Length: 74
Ligand code: SF4
Ligand code: SF4
Image 1 (cartoon, rainbow, N blue to C red):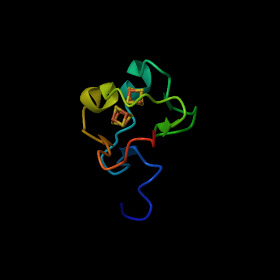
Image 2: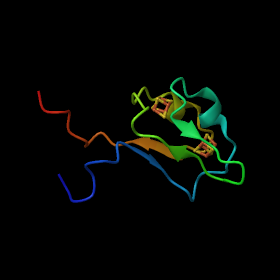
Image 3: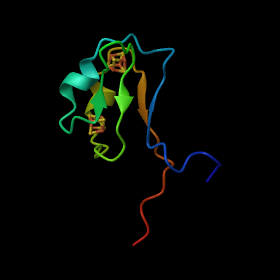
Image 4: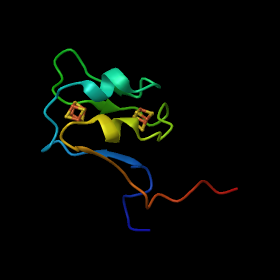
């Protein structure tokens, strides 16, 4: 594991994101929210189940799941 990867299971590339809010609309857990003046979604890690739907639905492929995050210790 490299430094800084432990808490970022989902990543939003702000350079690719166009602020369309599709991810916030389709997330079943309401783990992505657009603030009223926010052009980019905010990810709420404690709500996210890493279902991957936002990755599939994002039209610019701005969202990626970090497969290098280790599973929680048993
Ligand atoms: S992976 Fe699933 S639960 Fe997590 S933010 Fe994306 S759509 Fe929501
Ligand atoms: S669906 Fe993709 S482009 Fe649209 S707001 Fe979400 S991350 Fe940005």
